[in-house]
Each structure stands twice: as structure tokens, then as C-alpha cells.
Length: 207
Image 1: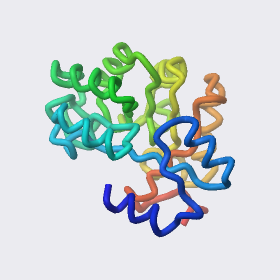
Image 2: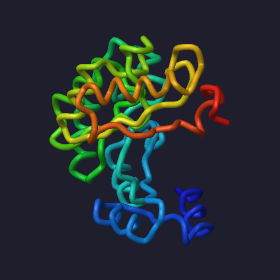
Image 3: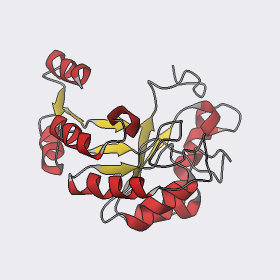
Image 4: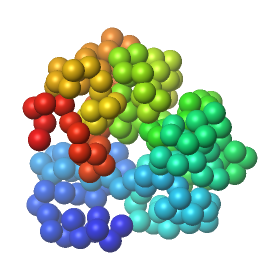
């Protein structure tokens, strides 16, 4: 959070901290990048529902229930992938939504993702996940998961990390994921997710 605030201070003419959709629209109108704070892994909050108030006060508006590791809320795509949301995870999700924090299912196990999609009362996002139909990695979304996120009014961001892109390591391989999601009716759903800070292997053409 402190790093985020420092970036805002250093780039006042480029970034705007956004907490709401009107904030985002205002940033665009000002020619600024809309910066939305998210939490990647609820273990950063010790999976404590009470600490969601801290994240909400920071202005966090999205949260991954897990990162690469399972935690008291759910299994992840990398650890205990057969486990969905626990009772505590379901309570945590409800508390997130009450505070206006969107659930992010990137990194979550398949059962956990479906639990979120069944329970969510508002949009669900997958901030950095690709199409499993093109690259069969558990970090990627199935077509049915993408459609379900689409139907919540949510967002899916393409991930440039090479193991999640597949193919021959070309930029065109990433473009195929975009075309695939568009073929599933994703014109208002799919965008760029990047994962620039979390990996070092990208398709050729991205440095």
C-alpha cells in the first residue's frame, strides 16, 4: 500500500487512484491511467475478515482469495487444486462483496472458482488468466469458466507469462487467446492482464 501511494505521488500527472467506476471515467477524461489497488492473495491479510476493512480503507477494490499456495480460504491452482472454498472462504467472499471488493479467481482452484461464480452477487474477475483450450495449464480458464465470468459482467485479463501462453513462444500465440475469448462472446470481457511484475519469460516481441 505504501509503495502504491509513493507511485501516485511520483506520477501525479499520469496516475489517478480509483475506487469507483466514475473515478475511472474521470481518470480517462483527464488523460490519466486509472490505478486500482488489488490484493494478490488473502494471506497478505492473514485471511482475516476483520482486516478486509483495512484493505477497503486503502482503496483495494479486487482481491485474489489465493496466490500460488492453498490457504484457509481455498485450494489454489498450484496447491490442493481439488479443494474449493472452505466455510471460512465463503464467509470471506461475502464480506469482500459487502465492502465493494471484487473476487479475483486467477490462481484459484477450479472448485474454488466455481464456488465463487455460484456465490457471487456481482462481477467476478480473473485479472491474469488465459484460455485452457489453447494452453492446458490449471492457471488458465476453461471456456465454461470464461462464459460464467462474462455473464457476471466481469473481466478477464490476458496473461503474457510464456508457460500460460503455450505454442511456439510467439506474440501471435498470445493473440490466439484473445481471439478465442472473443469467439466466446468476450468483446466486453477480455483485456490485457499482463503479470509483468510476476514473471520473466514472455513471448518473443515483448521485452
